[in-house]
Image 1: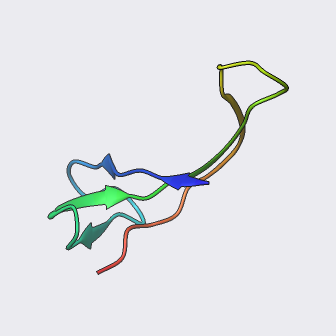
Image 2: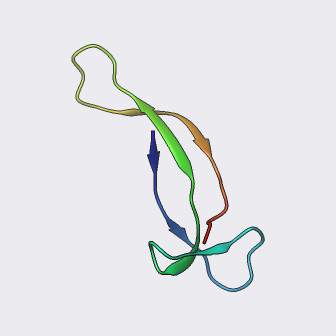
Image 3: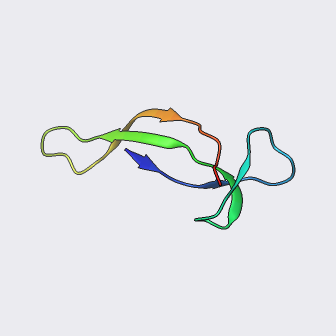
Amino acid sequence: LDATDDPTHGRQQLSLFNGHYDRWCYLPLLAFATFNDESDQHLLAAVLRPGVC
């Protein structure tokens, strides 16, 4: 699982200021998996969460 910031612009719904990133953003949570000896990662799921203070 990995969270990453997705900066927003203007007044987008559910966008909140995140003090860690010092910007208004969403914080999508991404789930990746690798299979056997492959070096590639495959995206399994993505959940869009609002940023938090």
